[in-house]
Every structure is written in C-alpha cells, then in structure tokens.
Length: 325
Ligand code: KDG
Image: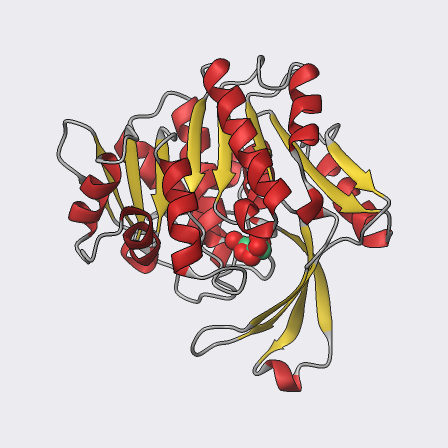
C-alpha cells in the first residue's frame, strides 16, 4: 500500500473547554485529537487522498486514542511509533466568542518531540518517499526539538531525491519559539519548498519583509525559491501567486457563525493539496482550500468539521437551498 502524501509532526490530545469563556473558569473539557500535520492528514484522507503520517506518541491511553483515530480516518499510521520513554503531548484551550483564545501546552519532552531522523529513514526504507508525490511540512515540528528539526530537514532531502512536491505551512507557534528564533529555520525550509502557505504575519517573518500587502508578500516568498505562494487571509479568503503570473485573490466562503477557528489553516492546506493533486489550477485549488477552512471553523475541534468529498461539493455549490431534503 503506498501513500500519495507523506507528512510528519506531533499529534496531540487537545482538551477544549466545553463552554466559551476564559480558561480560568473552564471546568469541563472535551477531548479532541489535534496537531497541524495530523489535521492535514485527516483532511486529505477524507477528500480521498492516500496519506501517511510519521510521528511518535506516548505509550499511554492518549497515544492509543490518536493511533486509533488516525487509522480509522484512513491515514497510514505504520510509521506513527509508540515511544515508551515519553508521554503523549497535550494542549488545553479555552473557547472565545470574542478575542483570541488562550492555549496551554504540556508537550516539553513529549513523545512527539522525540521525532528524529531515524523515524524518517525507517519510513524511507519502507518506500514511503519513493512511492509518494507530495511531502507536507509545517513550521511547528522544527520548533519542538533539535532532533525533530533534523527530522524535518532529512525529510526535505529525501523528498527532493524522490522528486516530491514539498509544501510548507509556516504555522508559527509563538508559545514554542520567538519569531527571531524561527525566522532562519523556517526560511531555510521555505527555500527548499515548492509551495509555501501562511498568514501575512507569518510570511513577513519568513521573508524578513515589512510588507503588509498580500500580493507583495507573496512575491517576496517567490523570491526565496518556491513555485507557489499562498497567503491565507481568513475571512477575506486567500491570495495565491505563481512565478511569472499575476497574483489571484479568491474570496472566502462566508461563515455566519465561527464556532471554533482552530484547525482552519490545516483544513485550508488539506483542501489546497488535495485539489492540486487532482490537477486543479491555482484558482479552483484556492476555492477548495477556502471551503475546507470554512467547514473547519463551523464545528468544535480541529478535525470535526473537515469535509469529505461529498460535503465539499455541496459547500462549493452553495448558493442553492440551505436545507437538503
Ligand atoms: O493548527 C492547529 C494546531 O495549532 C493544533 O492542532 C495544535 O499543532 C498544534 C500546535 O502545535 O499548535
């Protein structure tokens, strides 16, 4: 069994406050599966792409829950290893109707952060890279530890050898590292990627630019080497730029009520990658990405709202009746 997309990172258990409001008052939490690359993997699997996930979880109930869930979603977890020397990473977060939601991590020294080049080499020896078409990375994994950073760089090397398309979703996590620490590392990955996605503030860090204009930021990204730059603009949609052509702006799918914004960027990336793998040009790929992002924010939890192909088709065709009966 071979996978079209390979991704790697830390999959976490996310405890999400049941009620919106400040973390200090949150007394009951729902358990969800999270982790940017795992979210993308599930998003891709739901859209019918075959995808393999490389990582580590602890030898605990949370690790078991992660492996079971990813497997149930159709993700190839043969290289999601159980590490008996560390615990599964945790993330706790409040839900806010107003203002940004606070996140607390308990992931220092976690099993996921112990990802290393050995994990990547083992997966490669099993043919994972040779058989794939796409490698997806985020800027979270290199922030986890030195060994995780080396693992990312090794994966890039192997992807180039196997001629895979490499995408990087910048995903700066300021609770894990500062922009100053992140900049040279994410820039080095971006320079070796074919597709770079990020919000304007993230792309400004990667490029070292003080531009606020998305089109100019995208051009600055292309100047680092990638073929495609995608600026995620949330409720304002997305801008895509390709070397040698004018940038394209695609509006978002309106979401009347954002229930939980976390995971929207990963859903966006999954939609974009799935569309490109199916041969879509930049504009329809951005439209698909926007629709997936919109679907994600309409339910609680990172994975919950990720659409399958049928739901995606409905969303893209929306404008029709609001009830299907
Ligand atoms: O994009 C959503 C992620 O932020 C979340 O799932 C957890 O990967 C995560 C992280 O490191 O913040």
